[in-house]
Every structure is written in C-alpha cells, then in structure tokens.
Image 1 (cartoon, rainbow, N blue to C red):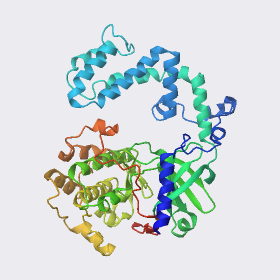
Image 2: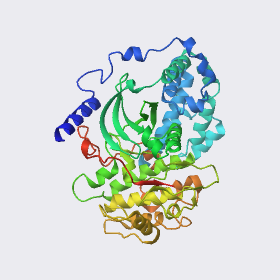
Image 3: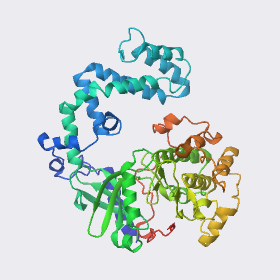
Length: 493
C-alpha cells in the first residue's frame, strides 16, 4: 500500500512540476494537435457564437487579449482607452491609504485639461464631477467614466476589430475549442477523491501540459441511483459559471463506462483535510477562517446572482489552489431558481442542511446561508456545530439537532465571529442573515462586523495574500488506498 501511494504521488508531482523537460508535459505531437485551420473553415462560427463586446472582451480571456492587441497595434487612440480601463481597475483595488494619490495620478494622466494620454469620449460634466470628488477616496469614483469608455469601445472600435485579422484568429481559437475531446486528449494520474457517482483524478492535457481534475461519473451508478437529471444539471450549471471563486468546467466528454467533467484542478486539497489532518488541534485561527469565509462568500454571491442555490456548502467542497486561494466545487446538488420563485426538496448533506430543507419546505437561497454558517463554525471550532468529530450518530438525530438545538461556542470564537455564526444559523430563514435580499443576500453578510476590516475589491480581484500557501512538493489528499470507496453523505428526495 505504501509503495503504491509513493509511486502515485511521485508521478503526479512530476506531472505538476513539468519535470525537467522544457515542454512541461506537452506531447511530441502538440503542434499538430493545436494547428489552426484556414480561416475559411471558421467563418461560419460568426453566426453561431455570441459576438457582443460584453462577451468576447469582458468574458473571454483570448478575446480580451486579441482585442487589446488590435487596439495597441492598429489604433493607439483605442489603446489609450484600454490603458485607462486598466488604471481604473487598479484604482478600485488600491489600498485605502494610497487611493487618493492614485486618483490624482489617474486624473492628471487621462482626464485633466491637456492630459498626456487623454480619454476624449468622456463628457466635461462627468469629468468635473470626478474632479469635485477627487479626494473622497471613493472606490466607485471612476465607475461612470469606465462605463462611458466601455460603451465607446463596444461601438466603432469593436466593429473594426470584427473586420480584422485579430478577429479571424479569435474564430480559429473557437474552432479549435470545438474539436472532439476524448480520453486520448488526457493523461490520467492518481485518484484525489471519490464521490457518490465515481472518482476524481488528476489529469493532464497532452497538447498543452496543463493540469486539471477529471470527475468521472460512472454510468452504472448514475443509472442505479437515477441521477441522470442531476448529472446533466451539474454540467449545464458549470457551463454558466465564470468566477475565480468557483471551479470552472474546461472540457466534457464520455467513455463507454463514464461521463467525464474536466475541471479546474485545486492542488492544495480541501478544507476538511486542512481542518483535521494538518497537525495540532483541529480548526483555524480567526484570520485564516475569515480569509476562507470571505472567498467562499464571493463564490456564493456569484452563484446566487446567476440564480443558483448551491445546497452543499461544507469543508469537503471548498478547495485550495496552488497559491492558497479557495474555490467552491461540486455543484451536483445546485438548483436554478427563476426570479421571484421558490424550490422544494430535501437535498444536501446531513449536519449542514437548513431546517427548512430538512422539513421539505419551500425555499430560495436561504439554505446556503445556514450551511455557510456551519462552515465558518467548523473552521473555527474544529468540529461541525451539530455533530462531533467521528461521533457515531444517526442522521435523524443530526437533523433534530440542526432544527432544535442551540450550537455551543468555545473561547476560540471572538464576539464578532460568534455573532456572525449565530445570525447565519438562525433556525428560521425569516430572521437569518442574508435571507432578506433575494439574489443579493451576500451584500447583507459582507456588511457584518466580522468582515468590516476587509477591502472587498481587493478580495474579488484575488489580491488578498492567503494566510497559508500549499507546499508545491506535497499532495494534500489521503493515501490512494485510504480514500473512501464512495461518498454516502448526500441525500436527495
């Protein structure tokens, strides 16, 4: 067992590091695999894909890069507008003590009379409003200016881009993205974990050497547990997600025996592993718990804004990347809620389900705030609020505790942390924090005293330095043969 685990870890780590080869895991045939077709074979895509500025430039990394290259090399005036947008983004994430100085510098460079790099599409009225508030330190000081510039770029400049060779290159990339993906596209490495329908393995794209996590959903288990709709829903939901705080879907394919979702790999392990398996007493100190809670909150905010209730917020599903940032994973239980409507169903993991879910009532986004409270409690206390570590207790008793018992707080909690957990773990969703603003409940939670010290713009930009950075030479997962056969903690009726 030990030898098998050592071999599996060694091969996996070598793949992650790219070995000593400058090709970093690329196949010898990678140039052929990534060869662009003639543009004439790609023009049909113009009628099949979203061709708005808001999509190609704001949401597509390759589209943004190509549009920026077009502006810089074809029209310096357009490039100045992009430089201005970059400056505004930098201003919005600047620390409080430096923001006034940054505002003055930005204004002088782009908006002042006789500015060296003027942005001329912004009206004098808007510029004067900015001038009057220049020392206010307001993060939204240049938001209106930014909107005006984006509207301008989405017009004539974007039309010129669409008629250029840079747009043709974008179409070639989109054609390449549409090529069939099979198991031969990837190299498979060690098992990282197992869920209700199959295992999650590390994998590597042969053409690029890039690492991902492959979630293999066994067809026999899906059919046996009547999970076809759940699996299809997870894939459809993942296709909609574009957030640095939620794992992204890169590829999807099927084999004879399994449906495979290829996702963002998170080499740092999950929060459950770090809470209980990293030595010392279980749990985190308050600053570390606050960091993870804030990033999970950003992920929930994105899901709720998309009309999605997560339903499975727990330490096992919060994963760390190489730098120590976290993302929400496993959207198999997520549900889409149309604006103003509710859903019903007893779905989730025992010990993290809200009372209204246990009672099979109707709800919108409220269950996520209860389970978010459970997550924060467990990160600080080192055990879940309604079940002790390794306590053998029936699910019915755990459900009763979640519905009736008051959680207990040790001296590990500050007053702010205790207040936040108490408000999130209210038995009634009518008085629970986050449940009074529909899809925008995260705004309520962000305003709590526990998060008062945070600069949310910097957090959303991924600029907050993580309190823990995973060792690139370590594998933060159980030994290969110690990983449980299959997860049985989820219930759905």
